[in-house]
Image (tube, rainbow, N blue to C red; front, side, top):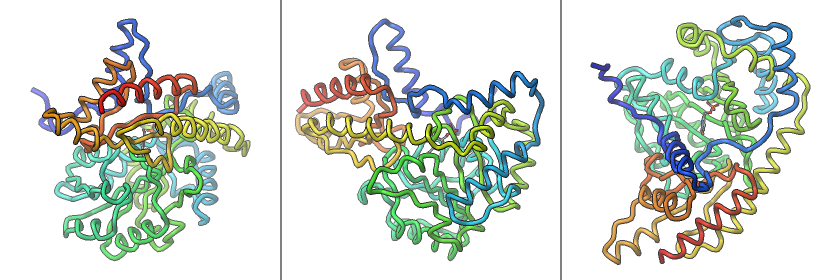
Length: 396
Ligand code: PLP
């Protein structure tokens, strides 16, 4: 008999969509996979160089639980530059991807019975981790406000039990980038109601002009002592498989995270740490900028193909590398013809009829959306979106 806890969560919806795509491809069909939360790219040369040097130098031991001190210094400098505030190494924990940083945050902050506010649609792992920690996710609907939460809605959701709010901008899956005023309002609310802010900026380098990513502590320095910044190199340097991220937070939080991490993963992978340190020390930004251009190019191409869609409005695509389609009109016209059409139905029909794998909005608590990643190879993206557009246009 398994622990009751295992009934509280299931495998990530995005991972399940990826598995379905792979299974369909295994039958020999060409499946264009738009499910991936990652960018198609080779590995940054400096990351390769740092890793190779570590391997040939026989680097093979645990590091300090919170990561190499030199790397924590480098990440503190990075955070200082990005937030225009001074950060020190003892406010940094290096983690096994942003996912572990978020898990650490949930375990360090949330008591059983605590409520945590999460704007919806949400990245599927946010509520799962809060639940694992014994808390209760409380969702703030954002669909009616172009996927940027309204302050009035957040305020109305705060109760005596509210412990924290999760803010993810640029947002996965919606592609929204939160504006300064929204962030300032959220920060003020957190200060007034003594809430923690879990600020996930994993897509911070992908804000598409004229949209600009704002770290919340820059907009509202007063919120700094209650903010946990979560970031990683999975998206910014296309290093999803290297599993390296970090948390920047008040020292008390970092202390609790150190104790927790010492019992879970010990230190993050030492080769990945050295590789990243080598990259950061070089000060090189060329690779990151190349990825930004690649993503911007995929976005422009994708928006142009998707503009042919007849019953689906253009996605907002302000940041990140996801198009989040609104299936509302398609669903309404199906209903008028006596047919229910869920987002799951659309995703599975696209896989079967068009050979295109997408993620249904139900994975993000939203039965109206469909997420398409434009981080893949340009030609495949073009082909996949054309197939998808042709198929959806036959459903009008
Ligand atoms: N946060 C968000 C919003 C994400 O979309 C993802 C991955 O998709 C993560 C965190 C996890 O990133 P990592 O690969 O660094 O664990």
